[in-house]
Image 1 (cartoon, rainbow, N blue to C red):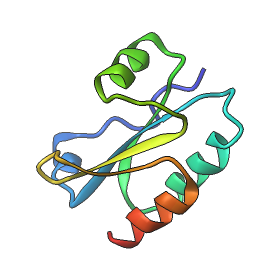
Image 2: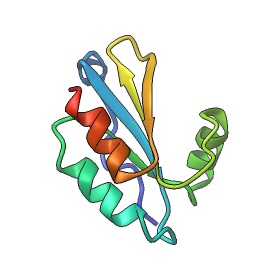
Image 3: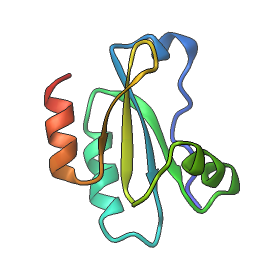
Image 4: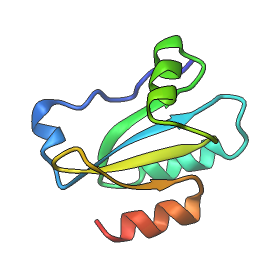
Length: 95
């Protein structure tokens, strides 16, 4: 199973925008979604929902569908969610 690709450091959390994404190996739309996230200049974590610790975080963030990426501002306040590539494009264009 895929683990987090990059854990954000304190300095990175102060960036203008960061993300936390939830995906699964069994989700057909997750692969292109992850690729779209990899191609952004936004720092963040991509987590596999099948990992027990990730499942607990998914409950905490009220994840209802996969894939889901939550975007945060530099104060770590949620500023948007993306559940599709078109949502991603819209949120990323505001970076």
